[in-house]
Each structure stands twice: as C-alpha cells, then as structure tokens.
Image (tube, rainbow over all chains, first blue to last red; front, side):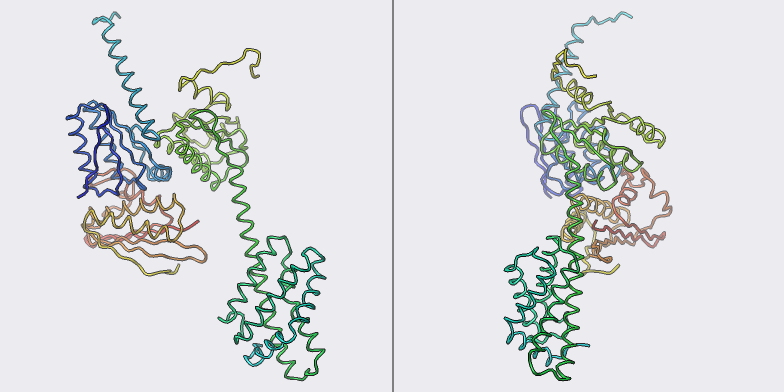
Length: 136
Length: 288
Length: 136
C-alpha cells in the first residue's frame, strides 16, 4: 500500500497528496499525521490537494476528521490548493467541509497559520498582563 | 434516376476532354451571380478544383454522392460551403456554384453532335447527381452557419464576463446584462479559476448591471460563493439593486453570512480594511 | 439512446477497485469530451456509488458504456450488487441519512451530480443503480 509522505518544515507539517488515494491510504494518513503532530510538537498542518482531481465524501470526511484531531492536539489544519472543478462538485454534492480552514495555495496557507499563531500569542500575552481576578 | 457507372464514365471523359471550356463557362455562370464579390482568378481556381472533383468521382464509378468514390468530392463541397458561409455568401449563391455545372455541361453537349436519346438519359442522371451535390452543399452551408453562430455566442459570452484584477489579491467580476443559467455557470468557473491563477483570496461579484435575477441565477451566485470559500477565498457581492433585493427576499433565498455591499467601491474598501491595506482618500474628491 | 461503444466492466471487491473505477470513468469522460467540471462531477459520483456497492452491497460490478442520444454523446455507468438491497429508498435518498457511518451524502449527492439516475432495488436481492451524464 502506498503512503502519503508527511514533511516537517519549521513549525509546520506539510502533506502533499499526489496520488489517487485508496480509502485505506487516507485512513493511514490520518493516523500518521496524529502521531507526527505529537512527536514533532508542530502547531500547524498544511494539506496540499492541488494534485487531486476529485474529492469525494470519503476524502472530505477524512480531511474533516484530520482537522478535528489536530485541533485537539493544538495544531491548526489548513487545506490548500483545491481545484475549482472540485469545489464546484463538492458544493453540488452538499459537502461544505465545516471546521476546515482553506487557502488558495501553500504560501497563503502558511500566512494564515502564521497570522493565527500571532493572534494566539497576543491572547496569551494579554492573559499574562491582566490580573487573575477580573472585576465585574 | 441514378447514374449508371457507364454514364458516369462517359461524363468523366467528357469533363476531361472539354475541361477548359467547361471550367470557363461554369466560372462565367457563377461569376454573373456573385457579381464580382469573389475575384475571377479565385473563382476559376475553385471551379477547376470542383471540376476535377466531379471528374475523379465519376471516373471512380460513383453513382450516388454517398458512394465511397465520391468521398473526396464531398470533402471539397463541404470545404467550399464552409468557406462561403464564413465569407457571408447566401445559401443559394453557394448551391448555385454547383448547379451551374449542369449549364456548362449542356453547352458542351449542344456544341457536340451526340445529342441522342442515350445522351439525354445520361444527362438526366448526371443532373440528378449534381442536384444531390448541390443539396449537400446546402446542408453543409447550414451546418457551417450554425457553427459560426455557436462560435459567436461563445465569444460573446467570453466578452461579457471579464474577470479583472482590482488590487493585489482582489479580483472582480462586473456582471452586465441578463444572467441565464449557462452564463452564470461560465462566470462561476472563470472566477474560481482566476482566484487560483492570481492567488487572490478576495473576489467581488458586482451585479450593478444585472437587471433581474431568478432563483436559479441567485443559486448559481450562492454556489460560487460557497465554492470560493471551500477553496479558501472570500466573495463579496456588490451593487444589488432594490428590485433584486426584493426578489431575493421574496424568493426566500438565504444569503446567510455572505457579505453584501452597496457599490463596488464599498466592497473594495471593505476588503482593504480586512487585509489591513491603508486607503487614503483626498478630501476634495469625495464621491456623492 | 444507443450504445456507442463496448462496455467496460470492473468487478468491485476492494478499495483498489474503487480507484480503478474512478480511473476508468475519467478516461471515458475525457474521450467523450465532457467539460472539466462535468468530468469531475461524474468521477465523484462514480466514486460514491462504487464505494456504496463495495460497502453496502458487499461487492459487485461496475459497467461503463459510451452512449449516444441523437447528436449528444454521454456515459452510462451501471453499479450492480447482490447485497441486502435498500429497504426504504426514500429515506436512503435523503441528505444526511446513513447506515454506514458516512456523511449520508453518497446516494443523494451522487444523484445531484449526474443527469439521469435510476435505481432498482429489492430487499435480499440486491441493488442496481444506473447513472448517465451527457455532454452539453
């Protein structure tokens, strides 16, 4: 069985799906990613699907599950590079992929993750500045 | 009445023997009708080719235009029809270019001395063959025109749905005219492709120039927005006219959380605010 | 409607076969000159239905045929299994209804992606679904 490689670039795990995945391969990717997030301590995952000429409900569901799992593991997932024909088909199919963040390409995906991270850090700084007891 | 292969062969010989006189009288016949809209040399060349085509087909034993041996001739006729159709000649003018062969052959027969019953019967056969060739031209002509119209409709569609880059990372589609389902679909695909090609995370669909929308068109616009969102881009709809707003509400179409702005300028300002780009406005040039 | 070419048949008994169905449908869709969006819709529908044949029907066959209707060319795909059949068709065709733990978009979604959709099912006998997509 083929496996989809997971690359670590800085603080980000990059997955570029280049093959027409069997369902088993998609499930394997889901497992691999969960393990890599924990092992690497990365806070962002980018899944590039620009090479996929279709996304059916199974792959869609797998992407949604990956996003949920990584969120539990404190990592944000961005799906990038969805082709227009794929997006149009997903809309017709009735799959809106709630809970999945998307970006047009890897670069914009990385920007999105960086922005999110910065906002997160700001929140944390704010928390530190504020007194522990809030006045009503 | 079909042409026998004997008769066909006879005419093939006749066409070869009197090639020059047939071509010249055929050309003259057609030229009189087209009244100089095609140069004489050009016409002569076309006619000579057609004459060769008929000659080859008849010599090859073609009794019907649908025979294999007439395949070359059919291709020639189709080519002639589509050229004429594109040059703006009428169907009659095109078909007569073929029918004129009969006159030309008749002239040769008149001049000769073999005008007996056999020749007459053979001539009727040839005449039927030429008629069929003429009708074939007519059909090809009609088909060529249909293709021409379809092509133009497509070009019109392309012309009427431009996707323009408005700002770094912002593209816009100013829609003008009636939106039917087919055009809405073209717009949708074009817009999404442009988002990918330019890497623009924002799109503005401006419908100031759209007089009315029906449920189907509104659905298309909505689907475009959702598809864009799936790809990681945001769509803003601007220029909704009061009547359209009323239609949208009356039809019960849910625009949900899609951003709508009064004008293209408002939409652009909205996007720039989101991206954090500064817009400086000269105080003297406030728009009304 | 007339058959315009020999039918190609794939036995669906595993994940890999679903991938093979997708690839065959894609090849034929390109040959028939479906638009890119229509290709994507048809391949996606085929993927959903082939997976149904495998998961719910316990395996079966998929037959892809080029068809013609006057001047229009198209593709017909027939999914057949000898599985348990569908007891309540209306329910199965409802968005979001699922017995297999999926998103419940397979059947209803696939129907929206094709031009013609016919289903023939009998409890205990199996299910046959026939879909057709025409060139515009």
